[in-house]
Amino acid sequence: MNAENPIWALISTFALMSLFAVGGAAAAVPEMHRIAVDVHHWMTDKQFTDAYAIAQLSPGPNVLIVTLIGYAVAGIPGALAATLAMCLPTALVAYYVGRLLNRPSQSRWPGLIQAALVPLSIGLMAASALILAQATDRTIAAVLLTAMVAVLAAVSRINPLWLLLAGGLMGFAGIV
Image 1 (tube, rainbow, N blue to C red):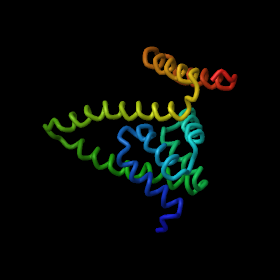
Image 2 (cartoon, rainbow, N blue to C red):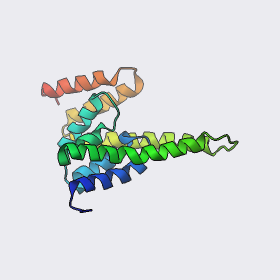
Image 3 (spheres, rainbow, N blue to C red):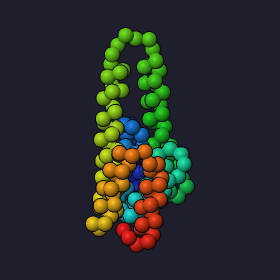
Image 4 (cartoon, rainbow, N blue to C red):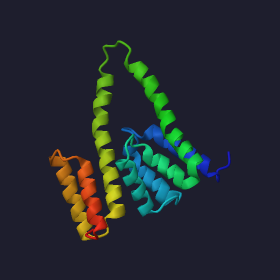
């Protein structure tokens, strides 16, 4: 294995990351950003943010961000390698843990572990939002818009796609 080969770099990066991405790919966004932008320089802040926006607007799983990073690094082979590296190790672990948890038992630890993962996942998603906001909010108007949308999303039942559309239109109009 050649360490300079981008395919192997994608596989080793995302295979390891998949094992620590509690809550799915969305929870690993801060680490993906650090690796793709700061460590390997595969993308700029703007490219990463654009890829994340595309991944969120597209139907399907949140893991699409990994596919887009892989594509940016090494085209279609990179997209396939990154996606499989992010999904396969976690799928195998989930399969075997699921089998273990489905065994009849009087133990309380499965419930305790599941309850402990909820705040961890929420914290990782909040860190993802912070990383993305820091990468894109360059003006006071953008910071205020981000804060307003975060509050609105938290306290209302408005579909987040409407909020994304409004933000996109404000960006297109040059307001932010």
